[in-house]
Amino acid sequence: MIRVDLRSDTVSHPSPEMRKAMAEAEVGDDVYGDDPTVNRLQDLAAEKLGMEAGLFVTSGTQGNLVSMLTHCQRGDAVALGEMSHIYNAEAGGTSVLGGIAMRILPNEKSGVISAEAIRTAGAPGDYHKSPVKVLAIENTQNGAGGTAITPEQTAVMVGAANELGLKVHVDGARIFNSAVAQNIPASELARGVDSLTFCLSKGLACPIGSVVVGSRDFIEEADRWRKMLGAGMRQVGIIAAAGIVALDSMIDRLAEDHANATKLAEGLAEYPDVDIDMESVQTNIVRFAVPAGVGKPFAAAMYEEGVYMNAADSALRLVPHYGIDSEDIDFTLLAVKKAMAVATA
Ligand SMILES: Cc1ncc(COP(=O)(O)O)c(C=O)c1O
Image (cartoon, rainbow, N blue to C red; front, side, top):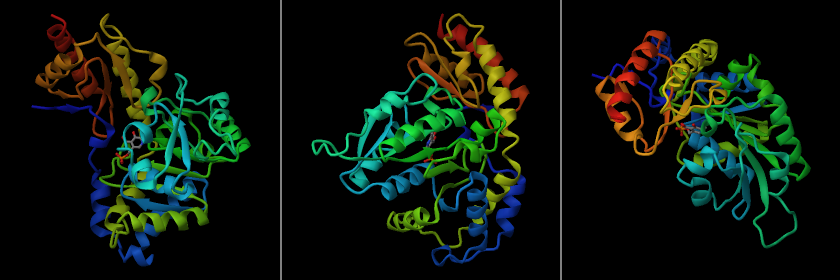
């Protein structure tokens, strides 16, 4: 039987407070702008990020897509990192649905895109190239191990983008993990950026939803794109209610997930067959490598021991979240001991 599911923070379940708030939510037709709970969530989200307005969307993927559609016309381009979720894991929606090209830039180990790399992205006036309109950065940077990008690093990227006349979008799926890890308000991570998407349904444990924040004009236009994508929702305060609980009471507890991730990483680092960069373990994501061919039998053996993880040949990831406590990490490390023996035998 599976006791610990560490595939992702997306597998977390809503808290009892969320379920109660959902049951009791005051609702209206959100396409008419009539849902008071959605309006409250959007306002609260904008306030937390220091932006003018917010838009409730179904997912992080949709928030990023709506943002790209709002920043770019068909034939324009977005510049973004090779590790980025938008490029690697959103089914190419930006290009397929938006006709927007992707200009891929190198990420540093930290997840940052250097100013030099950004400067290579846009050569205005060269009609051989699709004009880059926006730089998309990611915070935390999932592919780099959930690294927390700092306000200073953000300012350098924003500065380089603005020099080229580019807007900046942050895929902040886990922006509150980044803020908690750095002990700063999330609004500091949105300073100077034009739009940001964050997820309610990851570490914040909501069942559904993300919010896009930006200027009032940006959000008005993003709302039109959301409608076009078929995501104008009606009495959706039922879901937004959980988001309000999350923003009011689930942010600070992300520190527990970070502590559990560090404990897990320290335990994994004891194994000679595990290659782990402790510097990359800054939030709730633990990325590590095992010798080629060991990953899949290791994940299968972990499953037998009661720990669910995604299987891959060598590059593996474990993600503690709401519902996983320190004892579950002890249980997981015991499973690692047994599974490693089986997988490397
Ligand atoms: C960095 C990042 N951005 C965007 C997303 C997309 O979110 P969703 O799964 O809600 O579409 C994810 C999902 O894991 C993510 O890790």
